[in-house]
Image (cartoon, rainbow, N blue to C red; front, top):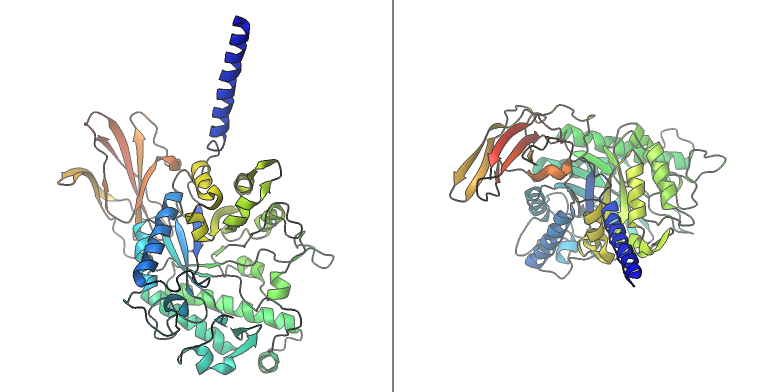
Length: 506
């Protein structure tokens, strides 16, 4: 009996040890200090229709709070779904996806873009304004405002499968959209300008694109119509990039294309081993040209499929984009719901989150993720947010650097000092001096190290705050415990200053 008891006890201890090792195995994955962690908040799905101003703000607040807890550091917010506006514009009408009727201002009045900028910056998040450059009317919109571009300039558009599209072949449409973007940048403190996968419309069998007249007028000597369409989109992307960086050099220009560039064949040796719709051939979007020419600042291919998908395998596409799109920061568009519904081939008892994150960690050119879509992540569908935060995003992350825009760090914070106030013990500092936009501190990082612990600023688990404020409330206890606090400054491109250390008793 005694030997059986000892065997059972030994087996129990081994089981506890193995379970403990299993629970720690995910957190043994080192979290990078810099990583783009984004989420798309869309309006074109109608999630705000029928809501009051207060209800929309409450919904967005709940989502932002949940995403902030998850570790998201950038929100991509849809502000122009069909040549309309979720912001105050003198160029385009208020969106029906905000108020229910195009051209009608919200009541009580508010400006969603300005509100979102303030809310995101307060939480240490970037705000990227997401526009659709070509779609002028969705299938479900039945009434356009009098000042809508498709009403004022009907000859700039063509119909397609229930949509109305700004004709990419016309210089007027390119100039118009760039004017809209310039207006946004001049009036709003956005961190990025983002476009998604809608260029020429997704093809529908038996429905040709009616752009013969534009081709005859603006062919530019290009004999092949497909090449001409790609030329039109390329020209627009370059013009938009130049508009953004001329207006505000620090605003990041991002594109989120469909997940397949081209399918591999004898004539396309650099394509992926896939069999789906193609950016290059079907949407006339030469994404690699934009990346390799530096016309975009980051690329987020929409890899919404699962590992093992028959026509568009996630793992195959991850490796392909990692290899071919490395000249600009590469982030991956993830579908939350599909990830939790798909089973891990090596462990059918769990979903594919762990397997997908393992690929992210293995591929050196993948430096971020954007979640499709924000509500699914905020609602923790299938436990996705819980697992992601607990095992992979368990420490804060700074934005990836973009040295091709700016690679000079700001000066260090000044006059770092803990002071007793009516609200308790507070660490204060003064912003460093800076004359140009690239010299000015935009945010601050606060690290904390225990007494005797080496100061390692490459360890993001030591970050206790990312803030736009010039103070940090200290968790004072009894004054007997020593800690080293470190404060650094970040500029708009997340270049980090030299550290300022302060030993504080708490």
